[in-house]
Image (tube, rainbow, N blue to C red; front, side, top):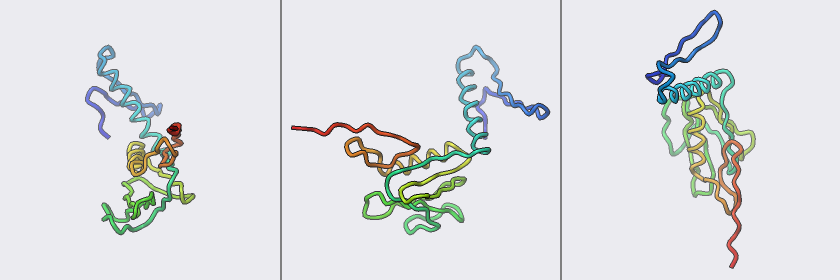
Length: 154
């Protein structure tokens, strides 16, 4: 991981503490990057220690070792197969570092150490059927809810 230019990272192994420093506390850009970098580091630490999860609910999904329409990006890559109402299943390759499992046919659990990669892949899955406001159908990610709109009455 690379840090933005104005921040420095110091670590004391005896006290087991890490400190993120910026050159000038009065400069606004430095303070902004200080908070951004701190949050980015926290996500990495939590990802390595606990892992990040994304749960998708909605249409039928399964995890498969091979795909018929997509070529593997790396050896041993698994695929998420989605049946979302098209004439063919949608097959998406799992990125490196992301593991997927299905506890129920309509739920998929994504796990990984990098929060950004896990959430980006969840967004790619969601893109195929975004929740629509009239019937409330679609792929929901991480407990997302949607307010239903009233039907048009003549």
